[in-house]
Length: 207
Image (tube, rainbow, N blue to C red; front, side, top):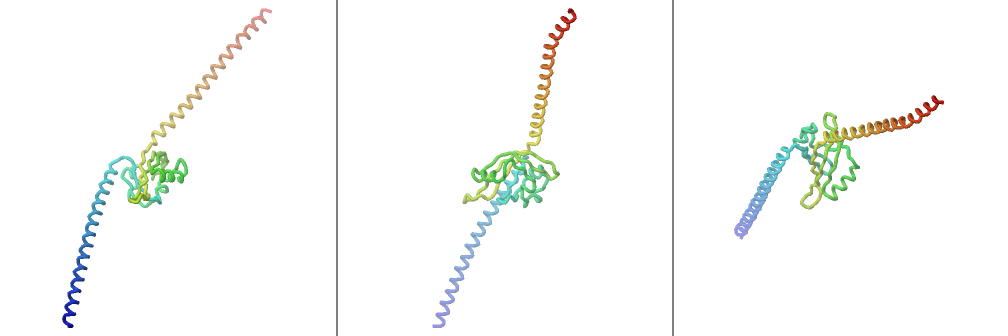
């Protein structure tokens, strides 16, 4: 009886061990599949990142705390900070961003519509300022929860300076036009006054 009980316990132990081995094998298979999927996803992300590095636009991604998580080559060339120096920094602090309206209003519109466009002022690493046309796109996870913001910036400093120079030229032209018109009016008034004065002088001389 003891021998039979021992044999049954041994068979049960072997069955439990076999079941455990099968569970471990299934777990390993799932882990291997997840690793493969993760590697494929990482490979796809690297491909997309390499494509973003080809553009001349400055593109970076920040989380909901404004911390930079991705910084492309265009951003490094435009602002002067390398990817290693920029990632992990708060974007608005790093570039001393000047907003056209309060940031809270922009954030509210971003979360309401999923996007925002506008012109901002950034300060580069060398201390010079740049006017940029910025587009923000809200990133969401599979559940629709916001997880980050993709930013694309185009440098419009030269265009902005050209516009300001044109406005200054127009203002100067308007001032010159006003002065010229005033001179013409003055000459016309003087001519109208000189005629009767000359007549008065002639009459006086005749008298």
